[in-house]
Length: 223
Image 1: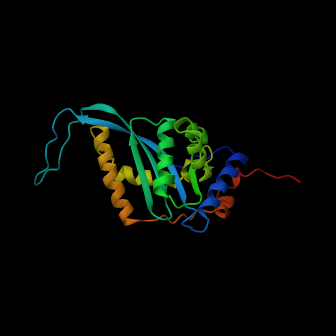
Image 2: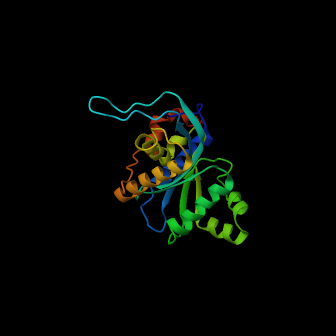
Image 3: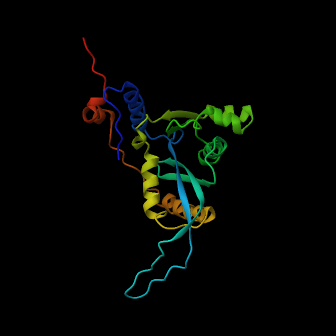
């Protein structure tokens, strides 16, 4: 669901058009566009064994369950080439994010000259987190490979990684998973299958569309 800000929000318009401009760039292997997003999954243990399915009856679960911690997912998704990586951890601290970014640069796209990273402006999503996690030379080398582009407040729908999380939720996480290790193994299997399929995104919402459909957001210019 879209969450639209108040009328005449110049900051929203500026950030939105920047993101939409990134999505219209020519596809170049040395300059990949990667969308990054985070979410959490409640781990749930059964308190009674489910009844297995049989002819004429589906598998049944007891309504009672036991909460067993939270798994935090950090996704790096290159929507125009059909590649993604999802890290599963027990926290979403700055250092965890920084480690994911380092893996993205050094393992995901080691030959890239510049990676454009589209994400929301959470306090941990900054270059400062890299300096918290690594020595200054490493942090600086990573930053030199990155271009940060932030979605506007109330504009998370502009982040294509959010769409991919929706697919993950429907295909993989819409059931009870007892612990973080199980979440990790299921997500890894899903990610492997999605990467092998290499399905890309056909993003059709452009700046020109925004200036028509979201006209109310653009400041009124008086003579």
